[in-house]
Image 1 (tube, rainbow, N blue to C red):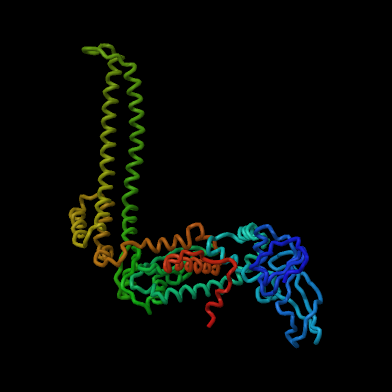
Image 2 (image 1 turned 45 degrees about the horizontal axis):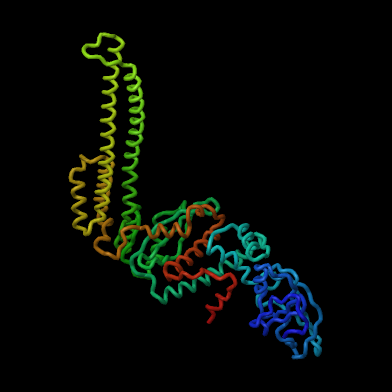
Length: 479
């Protein structure tokens, strides 16, 4: 309760706090049931200019029930905060020493609360920052200095338990809503590094709900077909499987067939491969034309200088100098016509190649399979008359036509593998692929990113990904 003295610091003089807070002059008395995290609010606001004393909520001896009397006021630094004391007692009956402690909030031999220890891993759920930057952020926001070594130590100790518990919670919600195992899946690999060693990351995604199955990491040096088959068994053996969407890797068809599944090859990857053959030809012609335009400019410039020196006359030219200039002009005009004709021919080649690219693209834009077959047939009727790069692409499409057009017979089958490409780009973008020093750190990153993806894209939960001062997530799993 409040004392009669007028306080010099009354920032806690709030009706809602009267039952738990008392103050005297520049000292705030807080019960041990209140976490030291409470004080960080005032630290953040720049209002932490008072002394704090923590006392026991019940000043009764836990051993004999006798009344406790003050004995000493040792100093503590919870979360690195200064001017914090705890009240120690002695029982008037059994003379046992009884301490006020933060044991509900701070582990023995530690200065930081459970919430503060989780700051690093929680920040990693939002953005991937270095330990040094995290240290600076925590000091800037909360006003307490956490050395980067302390941030690393905390994160290293709590990451696995935090992520496993949070993963169990989101998996439980996904299971209860039936948001996975729909039979149509995306599959692909990504190749990050850990301490400079290449790692193969195998990944499968539900095409309907975007649910990501667990990542599987293997040393990329020994990566082969058997590892892909092993991952397929790990994921698919206990769930329905009908269709697999993949890129054009030659090993996939046999593996997918062994699982009695239909394959849909990614149309985007196919068009990309077509472009890899056609665009170098277009670029080469464009570069050649650029040189021809430069040559044309030089000829025009020379022609202009010659015309300036030439004096046209009526009838035969008798002057030898003028005759020579006249012949030069005719020669330059002929060269200009030749270069322009060559440029136009090359531009027509580019136009023709772009037209073929459009025709190939239109095969996969057809409204039905019959129309797609007709368009491919018209393209491949006379491949010997097609440009070499187009003929190669057309023959490859013809060879894999069934796998490329499975989506036309079932609207539930996606035509591209772009969803899993997006997942890779979101969960482990290019600037992070070679950042990690250990496989453990890489796994933690992938697990954290997967949880975030499930919350955002599978469960459609757009609320904040976490709360910095909330650490009761473990209790939610308790029976």
